Amino acid sequence: MLHIREQNGQKGLYSDRPIGRGERIIDLSKGELVADRTQTSIQIDDHLHSEHDLARYMNHKDFYLANCAIDGHWVVAIRGIPAGEELTFDYTTNEDSITHPFQDRDTGKHIGHADS
Image (tube, rainbow, N blue to C red; front, side, top):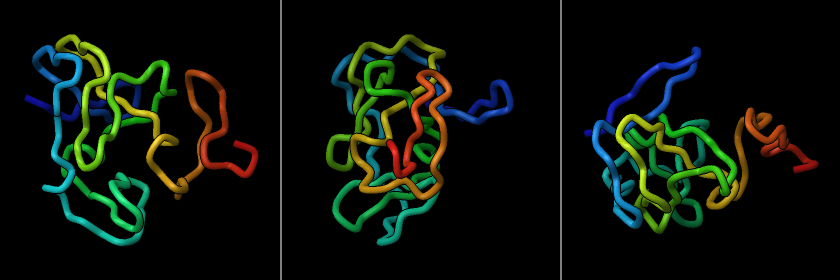
């Protein structure tokens, strides 16, 4: 079961059970599908974004630190994820652009800025 938890003032998405590598976790096509990106949407195709009730709380991690990826309209585990770990993905791997640029708290990289 997936749930939203606040940690250090930031909400994130967590799993109560271990998730195996390659496991499909969330079907993004079950969220509200919209043409325009928002701060919480996830791009699943050209000009198609999902506003999924749970996935909207997935935070960014650099690809080498993330535990999930977007594969078509699925959130998929790219490694085994222990119970209680936050589910994250690299926003730069599937988004054409970032609506609200930010600095990656782990790497210091500027995400969505002109110099990223």
